[in-house]
Image (cartoon, rainbow, N blue to C red; front, top):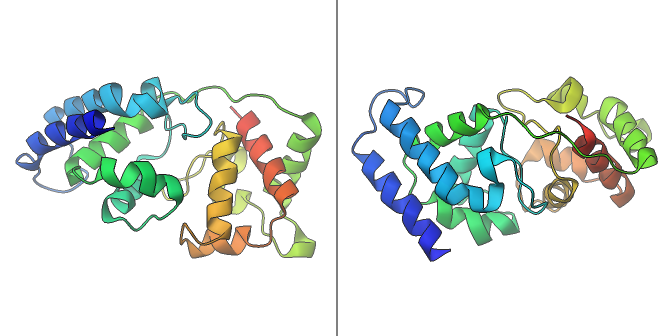
Length: 208
């Protein structure tokens, strides 16, 4: 971990003197440096081009840059408090400049997502229904309202299609317990039963 953080820190330090202009203006040097960090450091957990094969770690390929940048900024500011944020990402994000964050987000946003993986047909069908319609009797709104058809998300709401079910369940529990302090998602997740979360996660993992 110390070696990985040193790699990020060394490259990010080179960018501190280069940061200028608006945050969305990413220099060619920043893009090249971000690709280096993604390949040499981030890939250890998130896989080549952000196509994670370890269910504990999220797939980043094809994720919306605006969302990714916001999460990296939250890790850097230590305002995202779920266990893996503390254990992994607070330290990894600490040395990143704003330009590096934007460049990393742009890099992963441009990658092709991996195909989803199939699971239990019954759970997937149940998850698809909850995603599209919510659970009216429990006051749970449909996920599609924010994350869109096919769970491809928007700039502010993340792409969920093809994401690891294990990672999704972990995040839903973090929202439920307010370890990730996001009011909208706490409101959605607080009344979800374990079986409902598992079904939604199975459905999302199955999407391409």
